[in-house]
Image (cartoon, rainbow, N blue to C red; front, side, top):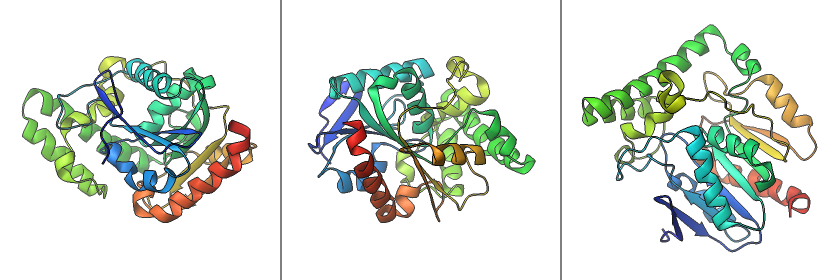
Length: 274
């Protein structure tokens, strides 16, 4: 692993590759920048790959809950530092999608294109309507469990919070090493269910104007997008949708197919974004 190229507001930023276009990779729960190891290996010969661990997601560091506005501001600082003269491509997964979409909607001139993995129109009415009663219960059950683990880990017992968090990660078939998973990563769920730091009130509706590649896993009890979202993305010029026979962590379950799909789409859209 390379040493950090920059440290911005306490966040180590890693830069690998020296291509003409910059890809900023943003992970979700319960991961770190290491989620993108295989993707960086596949792309760094052609692209400048930038990644970092979200605030509070490094269990070796103090807990650091970060509001939506603060996260957007952090992303802005990072993008301005690593690519001041050119917009970037965002490669997003899970909570990285939710925070990354917000950045893209607030700063559209700084984002040339987006590759989003497994999270689509998360705050749209169409998405909520697409969920069955059973799916809504499942979403509540795992998310509230993690929100509660954050609360208990920060106030009563870190060990209990960690056990709760790691047990849910196992149940969801996450391959991240348990030692890298901790209660402090769960603050986005506390934002969602407890309104921590203002929650997600005022978040922009997900409708980026730039080219978008949406990739998702089909082997899940429910989707994180509506059928309308798939249709909308698929019919927009320069955009594409691709399903994989995987779970939520597409880039880990089928790394070769994932990387090939991303590379092919980036090559097709390169002339319109540089």
